[in-house]
Length: 445
Image 1 (tube, one colour):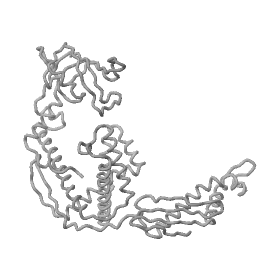
Image 2 (cartoon, helix red, strand yellow):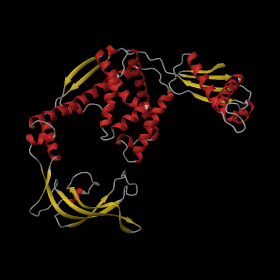
Image 3 (tube, rainbow, N blue to C red):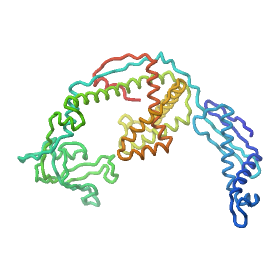
Image 4 (tube, helix red, strand yellow):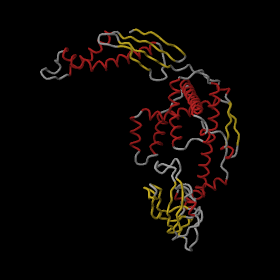
C-alpha cells in the first residue's frame, strides 16, 4: 500500500492511498473461496463448484464488498501508523479502480486538537445561595390545595366571576367560502371551563365573565399564529357558548388528613416537604449559576482550534431548531429583528463554544481519571424508565440495544462530575441572596 500526504493544514489532513491490484484480487479470491465452500448450485455437489463458475457468477457482486473492506483496512492503517485521532468519521473519495488495476482513493481526516490544561487555581467563581421565604412556602401550599379543590354548584343565580367554573356547551365556527362553518374539534358538551383561566384560545375564557347559567353568548376570538392545527392558525373564529351551570372551587383546609393524601404523616410534614422541595429548586438554580461562571472562566482560557466538522454538525442541529421555532412563531424576541446572516453568525459562535467546552471537559475528565460508574448509569436509567409508568421494561430494552441513547445518559453525569472536580480546585466564594436575586442571575449555559 502506498500512502502520500497531500494536505496538512491546521487540523485537516489528506492522503492519497493506493492499494495494489494484487491485494484487491487476493481479497476477492479469498472471499469467493470462502463462499464456494458453502455454495450449492444445480449440477454440482455442495462445496464443489469450480472457482471459475463462482467467479463468473458472483465475482462482480463480491467486488463491492472487497473494495469496502480494502478501503476500511487501509484507512485504519493510515490512522494507526500516524497516530491520528480523528474528530469525525474520515471522508473517503474513490479516485480510480478497474478490474486488474490498483485501487486509489483520497482520505480526508480532521483530527482532534491538542488541548492544554487551564490553570484551575486561577478560576474564581461566586456561589449564590438562597433559602425559601415563608411567603413562597405558603404560596406553594395554596397551589397544592387548589389542585385538590372540589367544585360546588352556586345555589343563588349570579354572574360568573374570575376563578369560577362554568359548565358549558359550545360550538366553534370559522369562515369558509363566505359562510361560517363548524370545524373539527371545535365543539364540546358539558365542558367545565375556569372563567378567565388559562388553557384555551387567548381571549376565550375572559369573555365568560358575567355569564349566568342558562345564558347563551357568541364570542369572537383569533387562533394564535403558531396554533397546532395549521388550518386554524391565525384565523378568526366565533364560539356559540351555552352556560349550563355555575360552580365555584372549594379549597380544602391544610390538615393531617390532606397531608396523608400526599403520603405524608401530618400537616407539619407536608409543610416541611414543601419547604425542602423549594430549597432543592433553589440549590439547583444556584448550581446552574455557578456552573455557568465556571464554564465562562474555562472558555476564557481555552483558545485551541476546534474541528470545523464538529462545529458545523453542532451548528446544523441548533439552526434546525431555530428554523422550527421561526415557522411555529416561537422565535426569541431578541432574534426576531435580526437578519439571517447575523443569526447564523451568532449561533455558529455558540456552536463553537459548545464544542470547545465539550472537548475541554472531556479531556479534563480523561486526564484526571474521572469516570461514570455502572451504578450511576443504572440509577439514571431507572430514573428515565420511571417517567414511563408501565413501559419500564421497554425503556430498559431500548437503552440496552442503543449505545447512543445510553451515551445520552452517561454524558451529563460525566460533565457534572468534571464540574464538581473543577469546583474543588477553583476559588469559590459564597454569598447569600434572596430567591428573587438568585433568579435574576444569568441563564444556564
